[in-house]
Each structure stands twice: as structure tokens, then as C-alpha cells.
Image 1 (cartoon, rainbow, N blue to C red):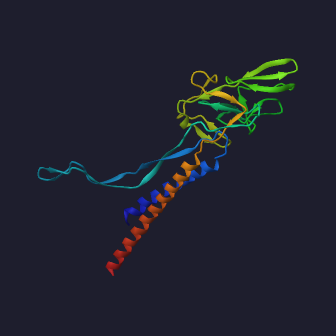
Image 2 (cartoon, rainbow, N blue to C red; image 1 turned 30 degrees about the horizontal axis):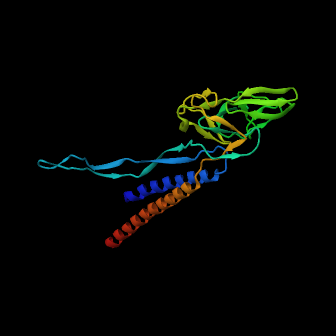
Image 3 (cartoon, rainbow, N blue to C red; image 1 turned 45 degrees about the vertical axis):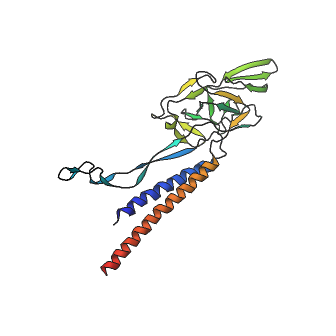
Length: 260
């Protein structure tokens, strides 16, 4: 069997995964805080038919080798953590992070997760929670008699009540040495891994942490034009690899004709 069959098959599989990744990016074009993913490829092992520098005749060495590749494989997918566009919602509880940092939330089982989705709400106990109901950590509770809520750029949460203005807590931001190492989970959440490093907390607007923008939400950073261009490239790559298989099949048919 021609080596081209298996080599082209790896290319088709890789381009299919790229299309899957692009489809997920485009599907989340309106998801709050969503970060686009890119696909990284690597070539496979090479069959060494002749080593470079090998003596091919008396006193003569080959200036280059003779090797044939085995195709391509997926190396990784990377999240691109550039800041998305900000949208004014007018909601006192909505926040956007201008710069680096994540919000920390606590799951019902006590596990910690991280998100860029600032569409905060209040639960029945007055606690600030995400749209999925996960409590923002550290916990911030809004009193029942509040009239207005104000979230400052440094994360200070203040409320206006009948007895006056009072601070009820501070929103902290968390950063990672390698945010691309975070594990993506459903619900706009990320999980800490060994590759990402441990989370470090800080005050918004200080020590390189992003500031808080109240009454805004960060939209996804998906660039539709770039994604559509990548989609066309992936489609063309898939077609070309499938053509290699057809060419290989035609070559075998020619061989069969010669044998007859």
C-alpha cells in the first residue's frame, strides 16, 4: 500500500479537528467571556532512507539526506486570552475585567473554578453568584434593604441603604502563570491544573491585575472574519489530502492495468 494513504489520512483527521475547533469558536461568538481556541500541529516521524553527510562515493558525502514524512498530528489547542469587546448593560451587578485576572467561584461540592463571565446576580440569600448559581469567592452578601449597588474599579462593593452607604465586600481577581494550561469546563468555567500553576489573588487595578468595569460585560474575543478564513483553509486542506488518496488509488489502478 502506498504510504500516501496513511499520510493523507492523518492530514484529513487533523483538518477535521481544526474544523471542529473553529465551529466551537463560532458557536460561542456571543458567549460572555469566551476565549477563542487555536490548534497546533506537529509533523510525525520520518523514514530515513539516507542520512545527510553519508558517504555516497569515495571521498564524496551527500549534502542532504533522503527522508519521507509520515504525516501530521495534533499537538495541542491553545486558548487566546486577549480581552474581548465590552458591552454596556446598565446592570449594577454586571462587571467586566479590563486586563488580566479571573473571578473565583465555589461549586456546590466546594471545588474552586475560575471565570471571566461577569454576569453576576443575587441568590435567595443575597450572595453574589454567577448566571449558573455558583457563589463568587470570597463571598459577598448584599443586605435585604439595599437600594443601589456600586462596584468600584478596585473591586469594592458598596450598597446604599436607608441607613446610608456601606461597603459589604471586595471582589478579588486571580491570575495564573500559564493561563493556557487551564482546563476548560462547561458554564464558562476553567479549572486549575499543574500546567497552569496555582492561582494567585490580588486587588483589581494593582500589581498587574485588571481593573473592574461596572455595568459592563466582556463579550467573546472570537474574530468572525479570522475564523471564517481559517475555516476555508481547513476545508481546502481536507480536500487536498483527500485528493492525495484519490491520486494514490489511481496509481494503484495503473499498476493493476500493467499487470494485466
